[in-house]
Image (tube, rainbow, N blue to C red; front, side):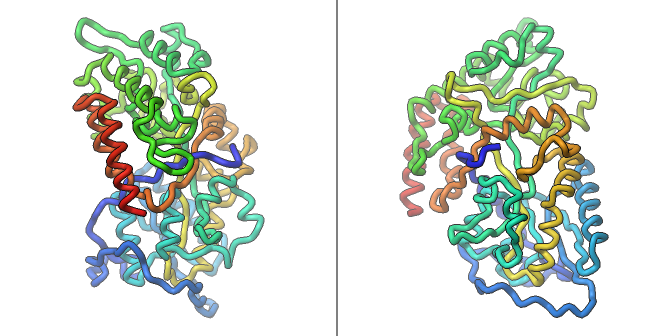
Length: 452
């Protein structure tokens, strides 16, 4: 993996949701905090809370996450059990909360002074949460051996503007193109020959199957699966998306217009109606068209194999990196990650950190990766681990080498809310792609200027 990445996109703005209690016996009660809303900043004492005296009693801690599926929750609970059995001072309980609710609930409980003890959160906004006083610094507990176990770009994403570390990486991901090996063999395609966008389009056309007006098989549509227009724009710009290296808005550049038009051409080959149909299938969680053999290639994250293992255990597939926009521009993909952090005001930061250290250790990371499929941010995660001994995971790890990992500054946080509506217009055929990018450029410039 690279020692420095390029661009890690900020996740979409957190959804508004009803707020409930957190922490200890207050969880689930209708306290006053249940209806508390959060201001843009959280006022909190910057000092580390005093630790309770060690009187021999077990300290109860709550770990908040969103993993509730049968594919993930049992392994998370097994991990928590392992920590509890590894020592006698702390006892952690896992609390799963829906992904759409957990972030707003976490902020509300911090504001109410009743946070949970360990929080799983997105990597993209660690620096923002630190600037808002929402997380505890880990510096009082961190040792050099722990800090040195992670790739620089991921530890950088966990570091605040003040230089303190506020989280440790739980998992990271990237994007790759998954392909059906049987379809490729039938069409006479060598996956290693797909090096540029032009190669990818040529392969898709060979894979297409149409019976009259009915599409029996779709070779490839770039913005289905887990890759959007931003994925391809980042690829085309060698790591930069809607901004340049100085974070100035660069939405309607010639490169971006060419890239968006290429995406539009792929959609037009199948027709807007077919695209809308397949997009609805993915959005509604219906049967995966790649898993069922309806699609020959699909952009998805490095965690996708865990889903395929459940939904299509007999599918013979492989992965290739996102191809280069033009020869020499690089196989760059956008990626993200999740972290573990201590919410501001947690009652026992030392105990929370001990759990975080345990979960991010090499042994526990190998257990989680092997059973869940997420990649580790550790720099010693090599093919001597069970997870990385598998050829497919080694191929995906190569994609991580060219995954962009730059955290955007706070003044552009939430930029998707003004850019994405215009990008959607172009994707849905409601406006031509050049006009969509021109309107998005103006909206983003106004947004950035208003947030300075």
